[in-house]
Length: 307
Picture 1 (cartoon, rainbow, N blue to C red):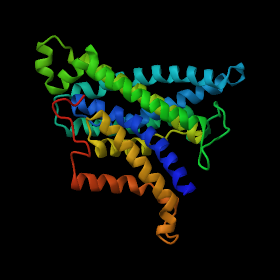
Picture 2 (picture 1 turned 90 degrees about the vertical axis):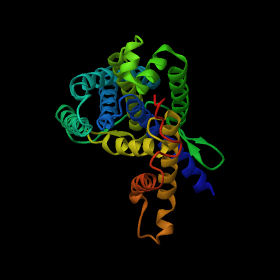
Picture 3 (picture 1 turned 90 degrees about the horizontal axis):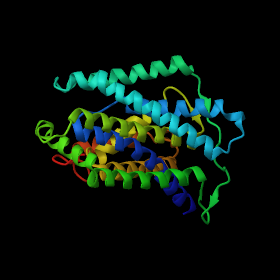
Picture 4 (picture 1 turned 135 degrees about the vertical axis):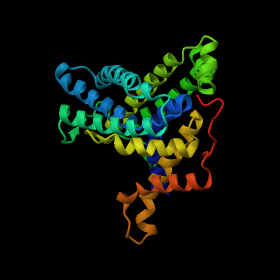
């Protein structure tokens, strides 16, 4: 039973990181019906920028919390500028093109960012320093780290902030109007281009936070680290109902739980044939099942109010 609860904790933490990335996917899709497959690489850039800042300031004597906060600000700024530029240069000219064109462009942008990161930081993995206390918190058998508590808390706070932004602010109303009909929204005084750029910046912020949390939790960074989390976060967004903020979080948490429980019990269930390193198959089996049985996702795709 102790193993079960430990895997539940691990799954919630993993699912929270998927949810942070899935929120970025679902916001962009909700506005312009685009799957930004370069989003995982934005996560990677956030982690790499954070590693670079933390490494450069390692001898400053500042507390780990302060170093993480400084690196987070730097990562958010760089990722926001990068995602803003990607939208303006790569996606905006193709906004009225056939839907296959921006999809292929997004895949090409993903490969471009990976290659750029490999050139800048070299391909070898790099250790991410422990900035927070490493002493685990005992929960009466299962344990949880300070980093994992931070991940769970950030996910809850970010979701609450996004729900408030979308439902209670002027920008949120503009997002909902643009999602429903950008031409009519423009006639009502909304600037769709500005709204779309703001959405990409918000998505980049979420990816930067997720990248740093991923690096802090697993202790390593490299130029390919964003591909698999990005793909699984897309799966989580589809699972919950792409275009639905709550669905992205539900999908991320469910996917994390399934993956963690599978990793803990897969070996026993298959008599040792499949070990925990095969846990990645659950994400893609879940994607196939959802697309086959309930393509609109568990909570349903938001069509007229997708933002």
